[in-house]
Image 1 (cartoon, rainbow, N blue to C red):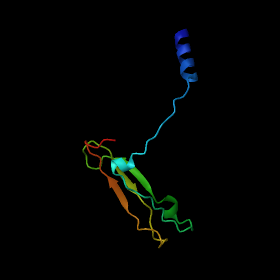
Image 2 (cartoon, rainbow, N blue to C red):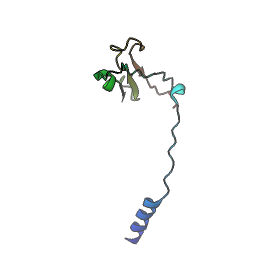
Image 3 (cartoon, helix red, strand yellow):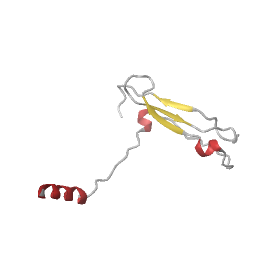
Length: 94
């Protein structure tokens, strides 16, 4: 029992390791710019309109990415809204 207590104490008081994130979007070929479609009037699409999904869209066993923009219905100066899909393959080296 003493060993378990010491192990738990060591785990609880161990110094946390820093988490490092690396931006690999260019290397992976992901070219997506989020468009909120905001017009400043708090329309529902501009507050809830975008999103993403990680799914195996083509059934090859590799996760694909679906990125969705909002609408430009109320903001004529915004670029057109569009969904963007990135297809992961076995040769993708991330």
